[in-house]
Length: 474
Image 1 (tube, one colour):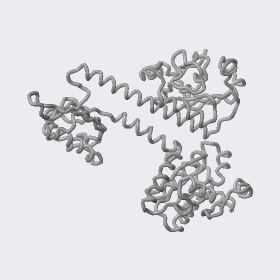
Image 2 (cartoon, rainbow, N blue to C red; image 1 turned 45 degrees about the vertical axis):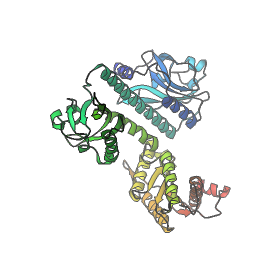
Image 3 (cartoon, rainbow, N blue to C red; image 1 turned 60 degrees about the vertical axis):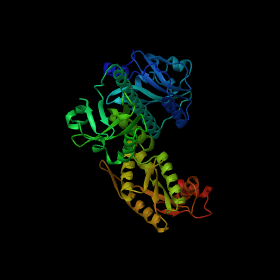
Image 4 (cartoon, helix red, strand yellow; image 1 turned 60 degrees about the horizontal axis):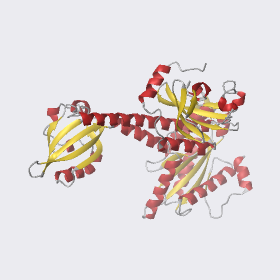
């Protein structure tokens, strides 16, 4: 008999609440599988939901069928803890060596799965990658797979939110007045003539407190200009329907994200506009889920620094601004010295804590206009804005090196690491992102070959050669 989590009933209830089992494929989940296969160089990947007696594939890449019995699945064991399950050779693991998935098609030998955690302790499925050849799986790869599972969890949360909104809309069609939305009747001057009782839940006001007020009285300053344009077109009768998203101020001073659907009303006799009816809906949960997904897609899960994607976006933005006549900028490539010794000697958890401490030091040395990113295991980059003078990035590089070489306490263990830095300035050292990054990387190799704990600036004629690579890797 296969093992089941102690909270199996609660887990299954959460899974069925999503109303996603046996639904058609969706691009957003299929993209996770394709990304996983490409990221780890493996032929198979799935987004799997584990039901009472089966595992069902919400998305898959390189895998046939729609699922398999739960007793045959690797994922049954993955959902027992929050950790990534890695099976380097399934034929040597007594839990799986007799599974039809191993002894027959698809001849699985390697498996790595990260649980999809919907809420603390609620693991409803997995994001897993599979191969037909035994192999290892590094701590960095485990972290990347965990990130993908977190993205899927956020997507499922968004799916649940959207399902709830669709249900609310169905009720609206059946009821004369939607009790979950705040319904507002206003004149062309946007002054409210009627407000439904839902205002108490949404904004904390009794309806009578809002009658006679205008929506612009409660709009967030950052949303005011765009919202005012919509109200103007409604008031002038130039549009019959509009949908907006913005923040309203609640009675307690907090802000709530709302979606407002406006419908113009007309006089029954002459057809002239008389005002509008607005349905105001709380979309805070949806906005938060979307914000989390956007943040995870552009930030490193361990350090919360910008990741490679956001670094690239900021780099392209810097080039665009430079072409418009703004100041130049510099890119600094930074690689930790002796990190591997700490990671191997004290363990990956200590290595992760070290990376977080280094990230904090880097953030403390740059300006708000600069960008710090983690682009690899112990590799960081900095985009330093407004650096027309050669000494600006050099001074920053020296400060970074001095800050990183200061001792770091890892729960009582005192460690010292260093840093090598390569510098390339734009547009002098490269007129596009790829060239500038390549030249910064060249300068980094020169710094490491020069003895480390130092920096080098790119110079025309620099190139990679075997001797430099050997000294830099040593």
